[in-house]
Image (cartoon, rainbow over all chains, first blue to last red; front, side, top):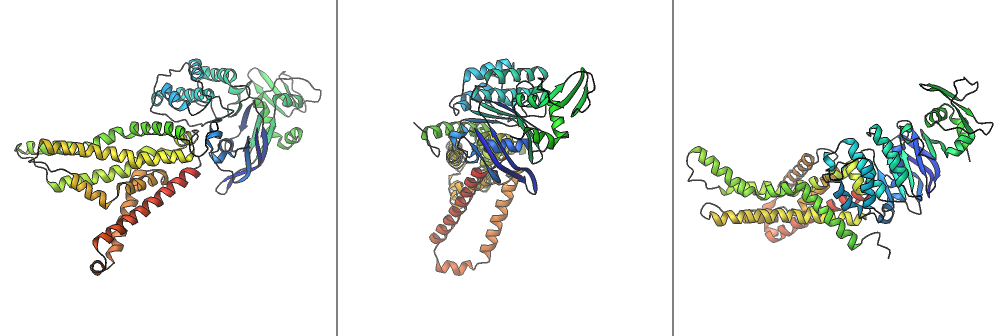
Length: 275
Length: 240
């Protein structure tokens, strides 16, 4: 389990994260959402140990990530938004580097590469941006680590690849693995992320499961305008409106509408989901 | 059995071999070209003399050869660590390397051994071998470079130069090679200027040449240790 307590981080005089506290449980795929510059990447890099918290602490199964101990690193994988184009064939990279992760599975790597229709015999520095990203995603999932942190993994992927990504994540993530995926492109990850974390400037607006969200908010897809809706948006297929769920009605969570609702009614939503 | 968090020989061995292979992939060709510089020089001189009109005379001036040897060695020792490890400050390549489940001590040891021992030795071996072969083939027209290389090595200790190169690789974000070279050159000029202000002739009367050499070696050792200490803490504390 990851326990974040009163975490704070600034770039010079500019505070990015302030007094952030939350718990990330095992076996879940967290969607980390937020506007540009709210600190999604910063939070991920703090979680994996690439940055040192300036205030507060992070505890990952008893480890302080910034110590970068081999046993901690062997149980986590961080996939950056900017991936390196290594001068090596994908299969050679996996063979040479995979051995440092105890549970790395070469067969799984090749299977995921196949799902992505990527050639493992191709040199990584000759790949397109999307192909390279898919190679790194394949490698990250094949490491079978307890924690995987992915920063904007669907950036640069074409439409079929986004579907392949969802398939790969659903099929190849072990039950006890925790994935934290930061993204702007919520539609790419709809149906796979649960719980959802929405970060705001220096604050966590929401950290709740889809079930908790649908218990407290109702997503209406009818074309009738409803008075008192927290948020409404015309879509090509009709209309989506978000209301406070007073009648325990079930509805499908629309993450984009949820995101906009949370941003329009920060205090209300924070109060609703306060545990 | 629980593996050590600081140093595991098997893990280090695997990492070291991988790191060494990466270094050779990055600078193998440069090492080969630098090692073949005596041959390249010979071909260039022969070609020039042939073009001038007297192909029978193509003796290489010792001063030219010495200068080329000195410049090649300094550039190699200084710039090779930058080519191998300069990307550690880069967000994508550096973070990938930092997140590899290998301890900092192992990564640091591998970096130091590769950039300060293995690569410089490979270069020197190749350079001497080329030079010796040319000397054996053309004994009348060629003088071996071993003397100048030995002299140079005793003046600038190669591993001190490599330690400076490694420092430059991690100190600067961009233009690492040029900046490292410029800072090193300026520091050396300042040192020479500082020494120039000392009354050396009177100093010679008090201390002998051996003592001066010992002081110089000690000074370079201190510089190298300071550089390596910086590299150790920089890589340990680096953030992306």
